[in-house]
Amino acid sequence: DAKTTQPNSMESNEEEPVHLPCNHSTISGTDYIHWYRQLPSQGPEYVIHGLTSNVNNRMASLAIAEDRKSSTLILHRATLRDAAVYYCILRSRDDKIIFGKGTRLHILP
Amino acid sequence: EAGVAQSPRYKIIEKRQSVAFWCNPISGHATLYWYQQILGQGPKLLIQFQNNGVVDDSQLPKDRFSAERLKGVDSTLKIQPAKLEDSAVYLCASSLGFGGRETQYFGPGTRLLVL
Image (cartoon, rainbow over all chains, first blue to last red; front, top):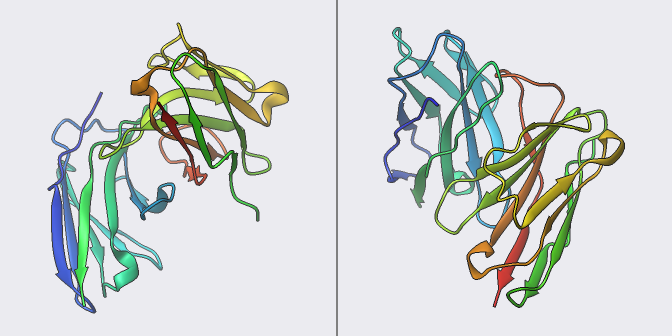
C-alpha cells in the first residue's frame, strides 16, 4: 500500500501562510491525494483532495508536483484555530486508506 | 445536514469485560468505516462496510472484535473480552460512495479506557 511521509511538527506565525509538505514517492496513477486535519478531541475533518491538478477551496490550496511524488497543503492565512494534526493520505481506486502520524501544526500568536 | 453520530462518547471498563460502540452515519451514505486511534498515532482502519456488506476487515482482530451494519445504516462495534491495549479512540466515518475520490466524514469518536 502506498504510504506518505510528513514532518512530525511545524510552527507558523498567526496570519502568515503555511506550507505543509508531503512525500508520496510510491503513489500509483489512480491514487487520490487527500488531506484531513484533526483538532484536539475531535474526529478528523476533510480539508481538500486532488489527483493531478492543483486544487483550491475555501479552506486551503493543494499543490501537486508534476510527477505526483509530493504535494503541499497551503493555508493562506493561518489562525489559531488552524492548530491541529494534518494528515496527508493516499486513497486508491479500491478505497484503501492508510493514515500516517501526520504533522502537528503549532500556530504562534 | 446532521453529521456522523457516535455513542457513548466515553467508556471506562476493566480488562476482560465487553463493550459496544454505536455509529449512525450521515443519511444516504453507503460506505461506513470503523477506525482505532491510539494516542499519538493516526487512525487505523479496522473494518469497512459498503451498505451492509464487509469490504475490508483485514486489520480487525477477529478473536475479540466484531462489527455489524444491519440494514445498511447504523453500525455497532463490539470488543469481547477487552485488553489493556484496546484503550484508544474509536472513530466511525461514512462516505457517500466508494473509491479514491470520496470524502469521508468522521464522527467525534468514543474514547475507551481499559483498566
